[in-house]
Image 1 (cartoon, rainbow, N blue to C red):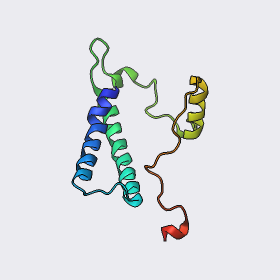
Image 2 (image 1 turned 135 degrees about the vertical axis):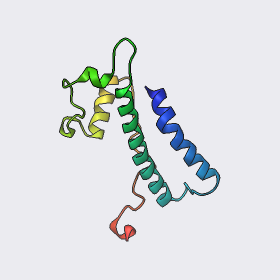
Image 3 (image 1 turned 90 degrees about the horizontal axis):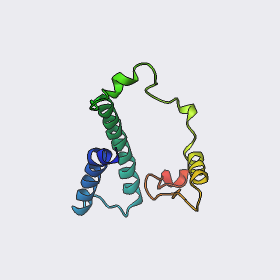
Image 4 (image 1 turned 90 degrees about the vertical axis):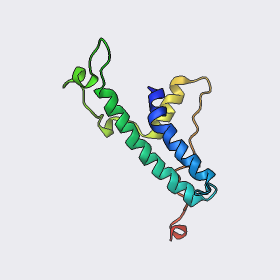
Length: 122
């Protein structure tokens, strides 16, 4: 499934961003640009992921059928948000489950607000 995600979502976005950076249309050293590009990229990737999931669930699996038809009324199309843990809680659970010193990078320079205070936003 990850090959499909990479081919249809990640690589096209990455290619476009690399081209714009190479053509000096984006300055990824600027925190405001970095924030805007990462926020938009996440939204575009979300739409791409939704399209991949919808097309995957509508395609025929040889010898099995079509996932949407197989599922019927037995499974919900979305899990209720209140049933899912918050990101930091899920990360803690993952690290506990995997153990052995497995750690996740909790912070990223992307999609963080470049304005740390109300004054700097103004």
